[in-house]
Image 1 (cartoon, rainbow, N blue to C red):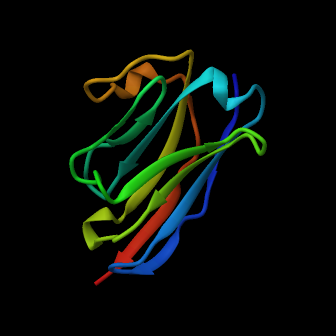
Image 2: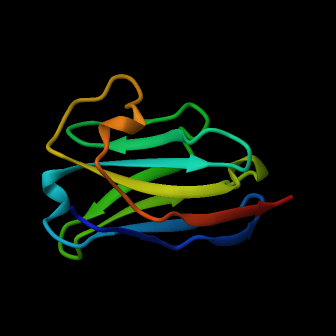
Image 3: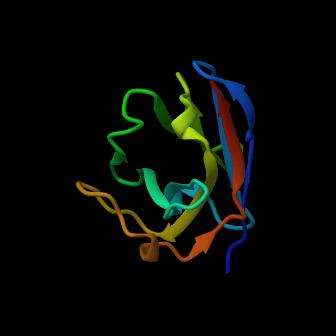
Amino acid sequence: QVQVVESGGGLVQAGGSLRLSCAASRGTFSSYTVGWFRQAPGKEREFVAVDSLSTLYADSVKGRFTVSRDNAKNRVYLQMNSLKPEDTAVYYCALRWGGTDYYTAPHKADFSSWGQGTQVTVSS
């Protein structure tokens, strides 16, 4: 089982930016589909973005969040701009082997490896 580690969370004011990073213990990200999910207190874990053969974003983050890959560093990033208080949550990176074109949000169960999450708090 590949280990996944997220980093980059923190406290930011509304309108600010953060960049989350996701690293894997083995393999290269080019072989994986990478999903980003988040979970706010008292809520279900929800889809944020997925990057595979295509990239798909949740409507709530479209135009503000961007997924990118740095193959040289074997990292995947979630750049979050124009943050809102409702973006406050624990953010998770998840991996599944292989590539897929996504036209609808993937299910959490599609992903076999999850990180421990990183807290993002946006103050108003």
